[in-house]
Image 1 (cartoon, rainbow, N blue to C red):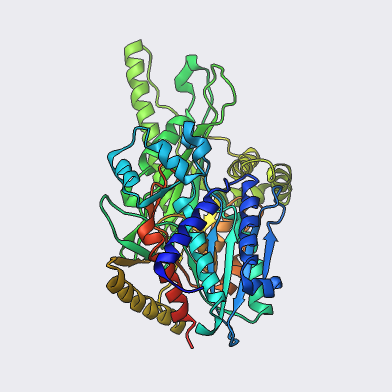
Image 2 (tube, rainbow, N blue to C red):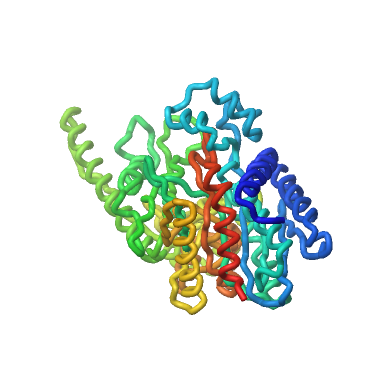
Length: 551
């Protein structure tokens, strides 16, 4: 295989379409089908025909669908322990958003013809008619990224004399929900590190990037990943008949006030290295009343997506506990004001309501209840995990554990319990403090200058990939103390979301992202920009591998 940019671009489009044709929606059998497809492609390469044992799969433990990661290890002619990990995820989000065009979601050319007949935003129509964009579910997120890795691997497998070291190719399922594929395969990476005596220089992901603002044409490379926590609030109020409304405390009112103070609050966006995360946003808010009646709700539940660059779990708890107290205080003050006004209008005597603000963390509640009841507490919490961990949404299981502690509490007054729920996504970035990382950054900067001069593209290097990515699970910036605080306030974490912290620390793979470039990921107008993704990205990946694995 020779590296002709025009031929590579043609092959990139062909292979991307071939992968998009497989409907690998997260949580469906298509995730197995796409793994089989990629394994077959790998086994067709002459190198792997000669070394079939160097292509293998890892089935996700306890997965009813038997989804699997696909791995392939390429070794240079001259032995070396230096290794680059090229990885991508192969699942996509649902295609339900395509509506009447759903049957064409995985068929780019047919889809684009059908889209021409629909109402489109001017920008989308201009892209569609330009011929420079390929539409379809997974086109940019991120089957074109997997295609780029496959072509780089094929070229290097046929030119093993041009580098010294190893390429570990890997695709993973279950990225779009829980990152279950990458977490499951970490022991396999640890095994390779030990048995094959390989030293991971870096990992390169090709998850999608795109314009950060209208008209942005910058090609972004990321040196790490944003982290994520899911702070959750369980609010227990006091039920009452609607005919005596002021005798109760509506947990929905408190939940709404918490949401008003946190949701999209720009001041809560984390910042590090001059980069700012998206602010927290509500992912769910509901009361827990199962059916209609004229009793007010007893409890409510709300949780938030919280991106992190450097803020630690203990600081998030302090921050949000303070906000919750302020919200509770304001609700009590508002209720007294409204009750006083209602009494004046109704000719009744006003007496200040008895509610008191009470906000606790999960750790505080657990310690208090454990002091009261001892080991009985763990027995009851473990019973909830045994009964529900495999069948219920893990966030609901965590909520049930909070409810169980509250049942055992000797204080039955209204309360807000603050805790963390699934998932926990670690934060990391290549800092350049070690000799290895300095070398990676120097070679990256040199490559960018060369590529800009050759292609005319403008690149920018940022620290944190702004969306969630499997790269988060290859190295870890959180300290042991920070992880301890997290686990102490994360009910059932080791069962509901068992992140292998020690394995990640041992692997410690500097993780970067050279993304495909496109627009509207997770929308029916998802599309990948062909001139860059098909024409520039594969060469960028190949040339960086050669710089890192030079002689």
